[in-house]
Amino acid sequence: MRQRFLQGFVIIAMLFFLSLLVFFFVQLSTHRSLNLKVARDTLQSQLNESAGADLPGGFISSLNIGETTRLRAMAVYSPTGGISELWAINDEYLANLPEHIALVRGEPNLVYNDIIEEILFHELSQNKVKSVYNVLNSNDIFQLLIPVLYMLLGFAVFTLMYLCVACIITRPQGEKDPVDYKSRYDDEEMASRHSPEFDEEILPASTAVGEKGENALSQRPGTADEEPASWQTKTRTRREPVFKPDENQIWPVELLKMRLNNEIERSAENESDIGFAVFRLGKSFRKEEELINEFESALLNNFRYQDLIFHLESQHYGIILPGRNQRDCLKQIGNFQKICRRKQLPDDIFAGFSTRSGRLMDGTRLLKESLKAASMANNKKSSIISFKTDAKKYRAHLMETL
Image (cartoon, rainbow, N blue to C red):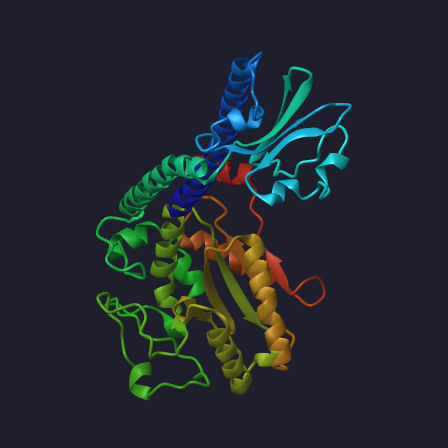
């Protein structure tokens, strides 16, 4: 959901700034055209007034240049003769003319900026008038920036409102901590959501759940980061936190069912994918506690969330991979196997994984698919096997169970 809101905001922001850019340049072009029309009409009106009049000082001297602020340069010349009148607000406009104006024949070459200035040509009796007018100055741009600034302010207000609404809608009710992994179901509901053969197939006899419902830690060789013996014999109740930062142990399989289902529901709410991987250790690890400890240490040090790593049974380890699709899982598992090879661990570390891939499912099915894939991995074909789902068969299976 949050990802969808973020994508929506990015699209809205891109459209807004694109529209704002188009609006600014359209207004700029319109303003420029309007100023050019005003300059052309003003000069034509002045030429009409001076037509047939006796102007002893010349046409340019009859103009009130102090009020004509946009006029930058003007030359009155004869097409066959030379320049009769010449004026410029500064010498930059006359940079291309020689020092002796009388040497110029025909049209004079006036310097101007073709972005903010325009050249105008008019007739004056037997002569021609060439003038340079400013059609876009700093005041024009400032007037255009005022509505743009108001639009940006409005968009900033919209952004704040959008983010507030997105946080309210995408935040589940009653959520206090985004890393709260407590179960939403009681024991009876959890039992009804799982296959009855789950415990028989996955749980070894040494890690079975007691009659009182207490989850004892798995009986397995200790890892390299060994915790005190008092921690290993501790039992967990439902009200205790699922993960403590000072713990550095791989979780037993008893905690997997509840946690995996919670993570699957979380991925469904966030409209993201989730994967589950099973690592199966081969014959080289049998009765080799040092190799097993080194492998477990590699798991804890190279996967982001230590509380998502579980000891399923002898030489089998499960890892929940939230937010990972099939390609991401394959890449992450492949990188981990490379790390194991650099540590000179035996090469019979096999992996199988499966992903939710948009399906409505519980943790039991995802676990069984991953175990099935891990059992098929070998050094002859591939050390990593991905369980690929068939959408049609899966829908048919769901219809049969209804």
